[in-house]
Image: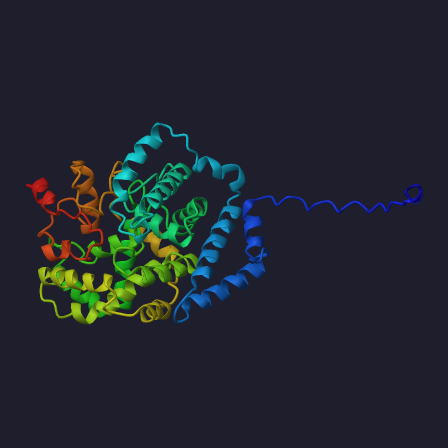
Length: 405
């Protein structure tokens, strides 16, 4: 039979599979076509910086890849194996701390103001956002959850195509890897430092405006606090989410992720430079606040400048030299908030929370109050209402007047 003479060819065994990558970060970078050697990655990142600065900015598909690549690389440098650790941040098992955080997160979700959380998919996306915010708070219990994170998380979730794990990674990079320590926790020392650094930069970059604002504020012994604080505090804490249109914010975030946190200061300088001519005509502090109320509404609606022009202003300012030294200097000079202060600055408190001490402390930071000083006036109504639907700062100066009587 033919079958008796059938021969079989034995193929050589397949080559062994390559050893598994030591981290999810390696796998993600290779899958996305991102160079994994330091020199090649640096060259790729420089190319991305050039793209981010071009008119029109970063295409959406590039943005997602960029943000995730930088986040994965940050996790890699910190020795975090996302395969082993990532699951616990999205675990469905809640402990007592999770329950408390969950209540606060849910309370803030309706305030997000993002298109992500509205429409037919709004409820589903809110649930995703809640898991992202809770996941980050599990990763960093020292910071936990702060009011305002809902806005940051919603924007990240949108860019990450609603992928929750990827969104947590980007939040980790943004808050842990890029912003100075203490922006959102404890005494808010990082935030207060940057506000002081900004005022120093304003004096060197926009000296005419700085002198005018100092004149409106009054002599050193006057009651009026630094006039820029009310605005820069909100801008920095929300990374400009509440003061500019979202397309502007996305491009600014691209630069922050690529170039670092000095972009926050450069953006603030660019905005104040844009507003300088209109502010120089103000005669009093009251006049300044009224003018800024109107200008804030124009900013958030994109009526004062187009996106490409703003980005060009930020680029033209250039990197801030000796920023680390400036931050170190001001860190030792600031008056810190009490350690127990919580961050409650974004919303008028309609739910009836009455942690007045915390509200006083945070507002004191914005107004630059020191021992023995007091606020001389409250914010005009049109400033409190500025923003055309955006979340407002809770700056109830009347609390100070009541406290210092």
